Image (cartoon, rainbow, N blue to C red; front, side):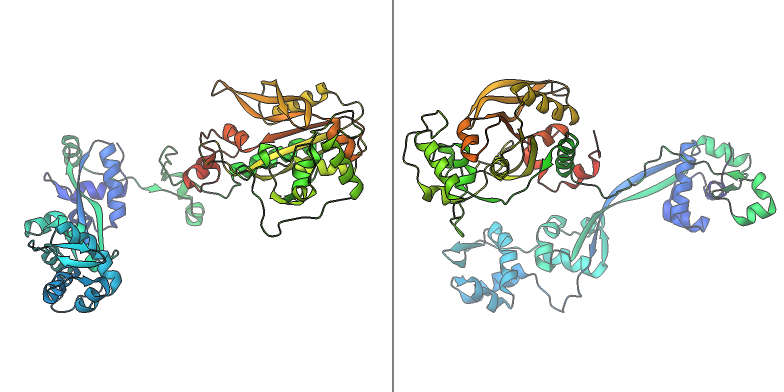
Amino acid sequence: MELTPDESRVLTELTGDETAMPELVARVGEDQAKVAAACTLLAEKGLVAVREVPFVEFVFKGDPLPDGWTPPRQRIFAALSDAGEPLAMQDVAARAGLEPQAVGQNLKGLLASGAVAKQGGNLALTGKPFACPETDAVLLLVSKGTAREAELVSDGVDVGALREFGPAALGKKAILEREKTDRFVQLTPAGVERKASGVEAVREVSQITPELLASGEWESVKFKPYDIHLETEPFRTGKKHPLQRVLESTRQAFLEMGFEESVSSYVESGFWDFDALFQPQDHPAREMQDTFYVAKPGKTPLPDEELVRRVRETHETGGDTGSVGWRYKWDPAKAMQNVLRTHTTATTVREVAKNPKGPRKVFSIGRVFRRETIDYKHLPIFYQVDGIIIDKDASFSTLLGTLAAFYERMGFEKFYFRPGFFPYTEPSVEVFIWHEEKQDWFEMGGSGIFRPEVTEPLGCTEPVLAWGLGLDRLAMLLHDRSDIRDLYLSDLDWLREEPRCR
């Protein structure tokens, strides 16, 4: 069994008795890290045994204390005793010679003692005896600078009081408590035998130097092996947030499928967010409990008068669409109200109005806002992707095939479509995808073909396929999160460990 020079020196300096690590370091005359590493290697070879004894150590890190120092708790109690009556907090601070903040920091300990109580906004003595055991503990620690818990206990100090009241008495950072370990090394029977038979060191080289190459010595020396299984500090690199990667993957998927991207403002008028989509003005989704209304500016002028007229007539009577409409008096004031957009469909319906002639394929990714109760699957702000296809040859099968192609690009193989209802599409379907690991179906959003009541007032006479899909839920499934809030919290452990791709 070959030994390195460091291992040989350690083995030579050990006797049959157990040796403390500091003493062994002094005997060997090497850096403690080197000696400790050699002991670890010798222990792996069965030549030494290393015994570890954990202990707690207190270190005083504050400024020197003045002569006659007493803890703030004692000074506060003395101030109340001298006054002989209840005092306000600021009066207590003035009498005790303390900052008001120091009184507040020590108040909990005073009240817990039972000797002081609150009377309204004042502090008063209760008549119960008061003890301040942290006095001796603090003074002893300050005098020593550093002391082990066992050492303080043997000196008769109340370590519990030091822990509980010391930080308030001296400041939070004045007392450092840390866990440390004593190490003791002893030869094993195999180590005794090896030492008795003679200890020879083999020179190990950890790197090739120009001198080794020039002398040719590299051919005869022993190179230190590298253990690739040793734990090391992980290599941290910057990477994009998982939710951001899902957004970019979504954008890339639609661009590759021939779509163009459209963007719009977070603030929309009720006209584009609701009315242009044939959503009646008394629809529950337009109530204050579901939608964020903007106070300043509270209104936006309506668009082209002719467009507004066609939308109004469609709501009231069905206009020229063949529908009977919603049969109510349409109010332009409600249409002008500003809201935080409740869906990115407001963006895509603008695109229909801007250029109603096909063929066109448009998508929009962005944040949307709804007055949701926050829980593990709902937030008032979340991401959505909307899309439209304007094409005279588009059909319901085209819609389903497009959505299937998108989810395949996002890594899902199974999906199904269930009939649904939305005010502005007919027929309508809800989209579900299958998550293999969870062995369950998850709803991702809604889709359908825009009704004539939506498209014809906008000047479009061709079929318009449309969908709105949640991206936060997609990110949760792709990154195995059960709580949507995880996507927005800075959980560094998760962000560091989460794979860049799945």
